[in-house]
Length: 208
Image 1 (cartoon, rainbow, N blue to C red):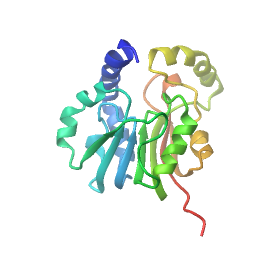
Image 2: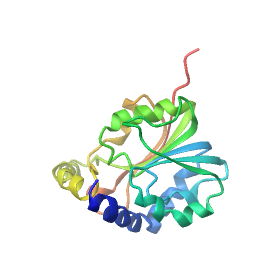
Image 3: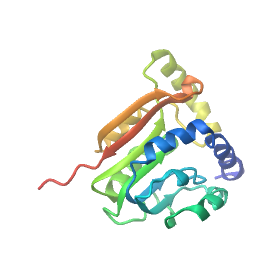
Image 4: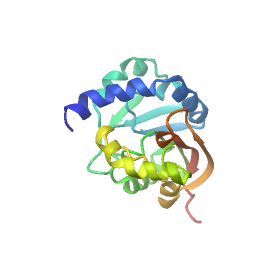
């Protein structure tokens, strides 16, 4: 990671993602979290104030170390312990079935091997555990989708690998999750950035 990715981009993302519209969405969907949570893409801890009382512990995973410093004040107010994790190659350093809930918010767009990452999230989640997601991605409008496809190479360079054109629901179900609730809508922003997939999926219980 270079200077831009390590020192500038995390600050820019923290500033943008603090907006009130983002906070409304966090409040709406993070209320579904329970127990021990793994948050993939912790960033600067903007989700912390919105976790419900039912959360007892948080594992935080993010390659950007500056985010931990930007999160210092939010971490000091967290009512549950937060433990930072570092990826071991592409493996999450947790045993199988270690968490009750997995969370990603505006994260799947940037993960290089997103299918592998989703399968790792599945591995560490308990059977019937919940995956809570809020992600932007491919619009159902053909005209918007064409521009998303055209601009994704540039967006990846400017925004830390962000893809505008990932079909989030297909990625989630393709990894083996079962989507139980899904809302799709345009966030108040230019449409190429704004089509949102939000809801929760579950890890199917083991067959008897």
